[in-house]
Image 1 (cartoon, rainbow, N blue to C red):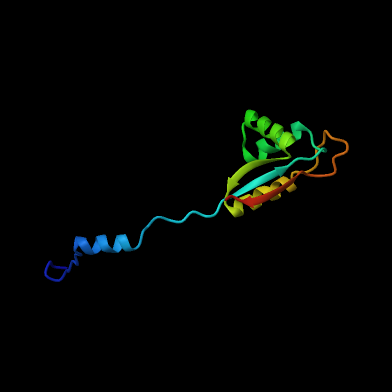
Image 2: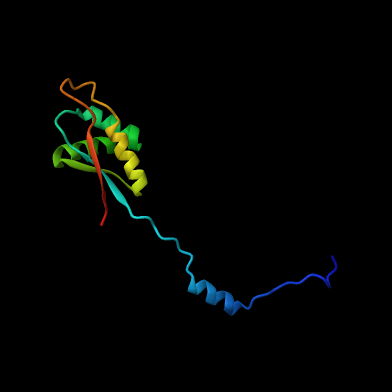
Amino acid sequence: MSDSQSAVVEQDAPEIAKRSAASPTKPRRQPRYNVILWDDSEHTFDYVISMLQQLFGHELGRAKSMAAEVDANGRVICLTTTMEHAELKMEQIHAFGKDPMATKCAGSMSASIEPIS
């Protein structure tokens, strides 16, 4: 192909600036949700700590602190994330199973999700 047959279209700089100002490229963030773990009298501290480490990847110190908080306050926020991820983590808590160290334990702990304000 010779130079006489090729064409290059150039845009003026002001036109490009107008277009980019009219359509911002910043993506919108998805709404965030808290995964809430609820206290009960059936599960041991070791169970809660183990669950928080396995499901959420919390360090031992953080998991112990969260276990103490759920015991003292009746609830603790395990994670803040998108709705789909929060639903998955809530389901994982519900499916974690009963505490083998607690004889009166009937099943998993309770969890819920709530939108952050």
